[in-house]
Length: 81
Image (cartoon, rainbow, N blue to C red):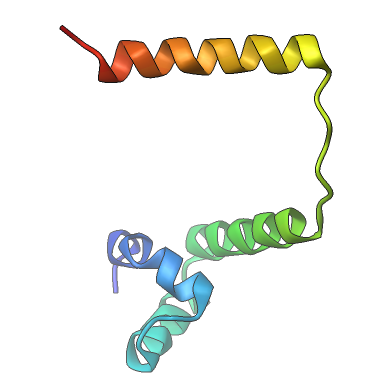
């Protein structure tokens, strides 16, 4: 398995929804590929932090500016003439 192949199926691997035979290929690849080990570890840590995190209330002025910027970006991207 190449790194590109692994990255293409990474979400399924991390979620545990990948075919067991492919999972074995992932494990074999990662045993010899430190960059892929780091990617998988970072994703798992991010998921753990997200699941354990608490919502943060944004200050109203910041929230309003963020929403405005996101709306503007969406218009620029999706409402092209």
